[in-house]
Amino acid sequence: MIGLEMDPESQFMPRTGINRVDLLLDVFVWAYERSTLRYSEARAYLMDPDPFIENYDADIRNIIRQVVDKKQSKKIANNNINDWAQKHIPESDQARFIEVVETELLLLHEGNIAKFKIKPVDFYAWQTIW
Image (cartoon, rainbow, N blue to C red; front, side):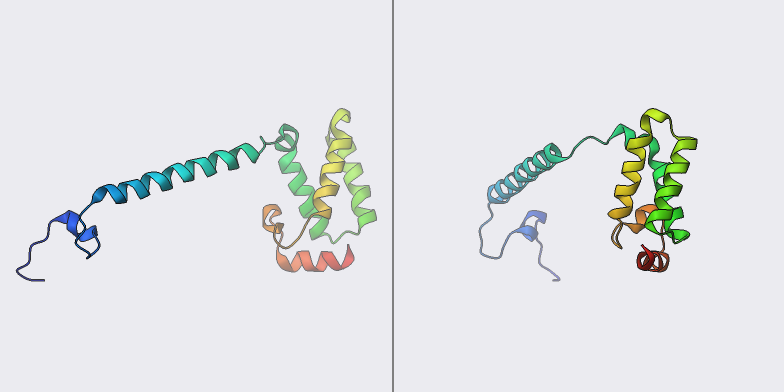
């Protein structure tokens, strides 16, 4: 409005005439403390990443993508996973590697296929065979 001067603080105050910034500060501090508390609780529930899965992450993703792209059935996929693991994974890690890949295949759904760079069309075509 022309001709009316307002100080910057009054722009944020409600029009009730109360010019107390301490109430706003209290709400901000309360919200900040609550947010940090919730973050701490959420952080406590999160686990550290599994070093085994971190080590073989690229291999796991590639195998799962190949199973879906080639539209392999459970039996063929299990045989190919076992063969691949015997050739490329140390013997001490083979059983766990196979278990992780098979579990990921069983848990595969339209909500997590992007993680494996699988197209929805390919996923749905594979799902009918699986």
